[in-house]
Image 1: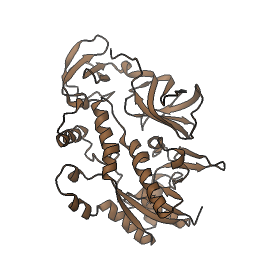
Image 2 (image 1 turned 60 degrees about the horizontal axis):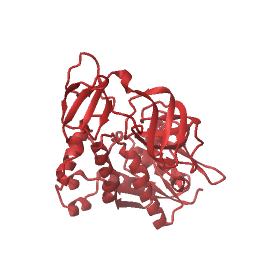
Image 3 (image 1 turned 180 degrees about the vertical axis):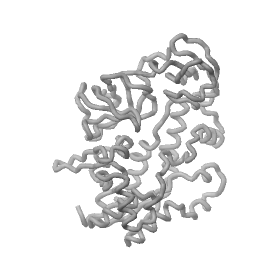
Image 4 (image 1 turned 120 degrees about the horizontal axis):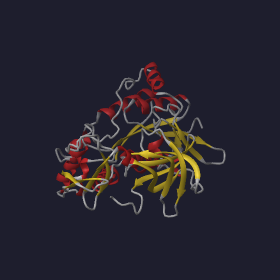
Length: 375
């Protein structure tokens, strides 16, 4: 594959910088691509578009510096409108419906890879690449497998389940077999300006991690009040007693213990959120356990869905270790996964990702089990 052109997504961090360098060293004809995805000040109307467009961000400048050092082209694409429509709008909508979304999943497949492939077509490039800690195995039969990264503490395959074969067949992930410590060491050895940059925020458009503040800003911008800020009741899960009131379901997520503002005398958790009635149900730790998880918007990375009842493992959140069970795909693009042992705090909006050992079979967005009652 050496000698072929590859477009590398470069965020200005150490991972994407080293990915570009390694591919260049392997003989690929590299071009860097930095995406402008979100400008908080511009989104809030604090300055004009012309001012925002004329200012090069620090990440873009660092990515450009790495490309200049390699003697390769660096491109910048403004994808703010697409990012807002695909990622931000979904994020706001999900919180308004009582879910807790994972925006990185949508951004990776529907924004980043789409932009990479668009640039690849423009520059007649065969491949695209990122600095994700996951692996893509290109089989002789033309199928591309998405597998976990070698560094289990940094594995990012969970956030890539929406990638389809048309993405994976043209994808290179040069850091998939490396550990983060190795990445920093190699970047430092090569004198990269990004070698010691801190880890990037998991959600780039909320650097302070204050989701409620962000959602309120979006409400102010749109002039509409999100359903997630409609006051409602706090009720006990099993006895159905009124325990208090709240200022909106957007303040809560499944498994939450702090911030309930009600004294129960023992640890209590958010175990269910009912958006139509704006009710938040509070229960014991045992009420958080469930064995059957349902998901929609399912994508099977290999193309065909696995057979119903296939034994596999699944993760219900990024830091979940994964647990064994059986997967049951449905013809309507949903699936059910039945865990051998009940899992704690299954959260609507998060991703259910199914694995065969380290091979990613596919994933979907967790939803409440159809027909399941709130009380």
